[in-house]
Length: 240
Picture 1 (cartoon, rainbow, N blue to C red):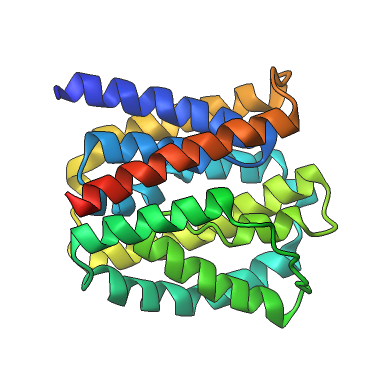
Picture 2 (picture 1 turned 90 degrees about the vertical axis):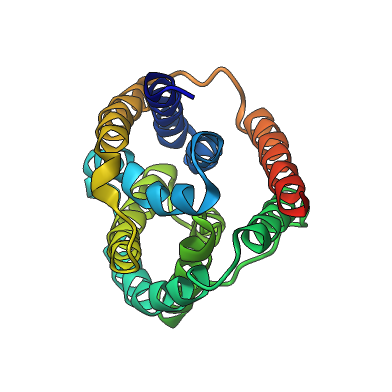
């Protein structure tokens, strides 16, 4: 694949992912990650996911600043400090085939497992969520823990979007530092970082002004199908 084609795919995915996240609060990360794993090897996609999300996360943090729940952010980030270290230790020791199989299995569980009733308080529980989300996110590129917890909390939609984005942008800083310390050369990917940052900012601006074409229920059904397809693709890749 030519460099121009890769950047075009990445830009379109980043724009769509940011708009979806700003509009529906969920789903954008899966779109961006799916595109990344199409245009680069899985370990590189996992490491790049942290950096390429900065534009979208920063713009959502800025847009919903007044609604952020800062006690959750502080407690989650404290747990993330531990989780990133543990996740990075696993990441550098897990073969790509095993990583792909485990990631595919996780996505299929996320898509089809029964809903869990989370009883999480704004104290020590979010510290544990931070550890678990950071371990899974550093190992697989997708955390998949914090978002469902926030969606089942008492926070309103704008508070969920702002709090989630702020927690993640701080986590991504930690993850990026960890991957860089493990030898990943981010400087060689500066065109991808630039394109994703610009389109991520634009996507959030669009998402805040979008009138959803799908109801929340229909959107979640489409997202479930997308996650299922992504999971099956990783399972096949790992087995192959």
